[in-house]
Length: 144
Image (tube, rainbow, N blue to C red):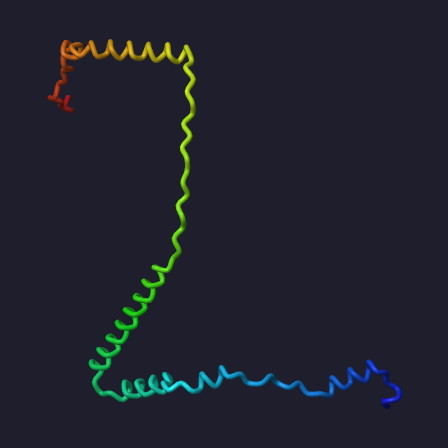
């Protein structure tokens, strides 16, 4: 195709296809992470080499147990600090509404009958003393 055969829109599309995509410039965050003085990978590999080359397995085991105990201890400390940061939920106050009781004549009559019956029961305290105790025969045998 020649330039005369293509229109303006087609020419722009061809130009966009021909241009290479330029990557965005590297930010300063990568430079900060590379300038750390402590390199945990080197420390870990050196510690690993020391443990592998050691000829005393009991000492290696004790060191590893001590390190594991320290890691668990610090993890528990971090977990306990996170629990203190839980926001407090404000308590809701509720009002107790007691229903208004209307004096119904049937209810008041029933309450009077109940109080009369209770007074009669209180008067019958001696009634239980007059009753004889039940007699039971404790000599039970299963032989014929």
